[in-house]
Image (cartoon, rainbow, N blue to C red; front, side, top):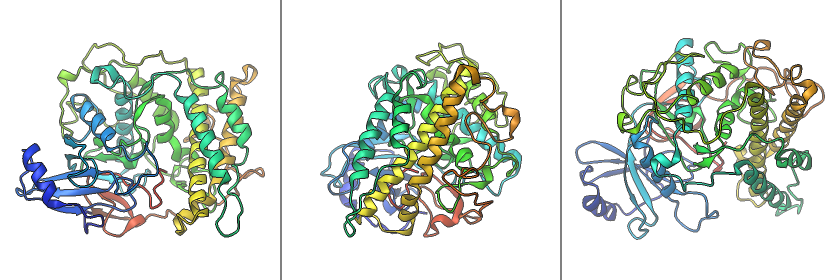
Length: 491
């Protein structure tokens, strides 16, 4: 719920700029701030006629990263996708003049719907849970089949070498983070377990997924989606800060993360959702069902932009939505060209490539936690939340190594049929996912059993933000924006 403004802005200057450039917003406006811990300060604007809007701006002061907090980038992709079947909020304006309220900002539509902070989707019927996941998967596939050139985003990122660049970037980042020393003890943060072996595997282009490029969100997951208030339908994708042109498997592996981390020990890791263990939650699709639906939709032609609504509140019929279709889906009424720049691989290669992508995604989470440990060593992060994430870097890196070993085994010609788990072997297990909890055979984490969820059962009206002080006590919220974490991480 939007509330007290913690990072003030010049409301008068803002109103004068709006009056001149955004006729859809009647001034004066009432300003409230959403959430907590977001990387880009986010505000609710209530116009004189009662309509609500959302303003996103860069944080004040000197920015540590030149690539983070790119609100201009968020605006650009949201605006570009307005004429497609990908649900996004309407973008009204971008102001790049820092003299107005101190930093660049943009204003977009307020989405009045539901955000589920727990990807298990608690407190709904199993069929509704299944339908919610189905539409999330379809929404991701629709994004990935958009040709960047068709929406003016051909220079939004590099069309080749995404994973090779990612590997090089994270190698340098991890080396720097490992060298950070504690300000009191002078002890270095230290490198992640199996770091050299992980880097050797990921850097080997023969092991990497076949190079292809699509528009990617960069942090696609259930709690970055806004769903219709009553229907199992995505009405908007939020938090586009990390979007680019990249490999589509980076998004699908991020969406599948809860299925894999469910097997970690919740006492030693973070974001562990035991509800994703096999047969733990009725209505959750299996990973194989998710990938089957994803490839069914992404391999279909994309509808033409002229027949799509630019409003995020379009009906499910206009978006070709069939909310309960695992694994089958209704075809779109179109015959446009396929937008994927590279052909999709055969099922066995696809399974192997998804194993690689999932292992890299878990490694990336370990590296993010190592970064939190580095900030903790420099006393830039000191909360219990930060400590738990810092301590999770080792178990996550160990788990990434487990997945790498599984991926290497399944890529061996002699083991292609025996090492890759089948969809029938577990109701919630897919390619590369170990059959036991990590640690059952002396790995990185002991079996912690079925942990109780850290989230409560209440829902709240919060619009765009993270609630009214309830923090992690919310499983479902109503309204329009995803949150960062308290330490600024993107886990």
